[in-house]
Amino acid sequence: MNENPASNAPNPAMVFDTLNAYQRTGALRAAIELRIFSIIHHTPLTAERIAQECQASSRGVRMLCDYLTVHGFLSRSQTEYSLTPTSAVFLDEASPQYMGAMARFVASDEMIDTFCGVTGSVKKGGTLLPDGGSTKLDYEPWIEFAESMAPMMMPSAMFIAGLVSERFGKRPIRVFDIAASHGQFGLSIARQFPESSVVAQDFAPVLTVTRRNVEHAGMMNRYEFLPGDVMTIDYPGMFDCILLTNFLHHFSQSACENLLRRLKSHLNPSGIIVTLEFVPNEDRISPPMPATFALTMLMTTGEGDAYTFAEYCRMFSSAGFHQNQLLDVPQSPSRVIVSAV
Image (tube, rainbow, N blue to C red):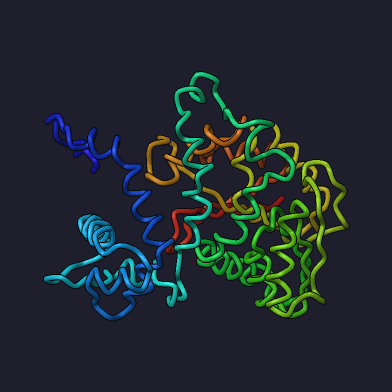
């Protein structure tokens, strides 16, 4: 519950709800693991019927479903539970926009345990996780990210593919997909450009997921795979489009500038870098999701942050990119920065 900034009345419910917010995470994760939304699908069901399908106690299912109803994930008529529009689109496995798999990463035990140490990270000014947290070599949770986060990324991937198409028409281009992960950004461009080629870079264990998705898309003949740390490995040749999606926020501004200088020397004269990020406004407290993402970087990285557009412009300009355009991504809290020399 958000306190109305126009009101000076104290709001104890905001304090209570925030201190209990972990319960909402646990309840939603349990419902996803039990497949409650997929079991209900289009047919209203009683707690007893749901319990039979997910092999749980009817008492437990009733209590969980009532909790989910209070928080808008289910609706109830008499004794039967139905999906709400949000759960029907994003939490039913039959939906093409299913997001439930994200729980394996964003609500993992490791992530929840990490946020039990906010006090320590605030005192330190960075993550309490060993070896720099999510920036360490072969950070294992990135495999789970690659396997579970593709549905959330698809609107951004399709938007970026459209931008690249506007820039290059239909001529063949060479794409460098940095931290390729699930591979959907490079694949979306490859579908738009039938004669394009993509170099997908990531840590070797993550690239197994990328490779699987590329193979499923039938595009192995148009892909190269580059394992290793993008900050130190050699880059294979020149590119027309370099993708930096959900990456720069993990590092300090100086580290980002060093990377951008290296990338510039591998970008063709008419090429572009496309950066996808959570970019807060200059006030750093809006919009809510990009603004609060800074805390995630505090908890999981040593020097990362949610940078403003002005900060990104300084980084890119320092590396020699003086044309930088900020665009909002439809149906997404992310923003895209298109940069050129």
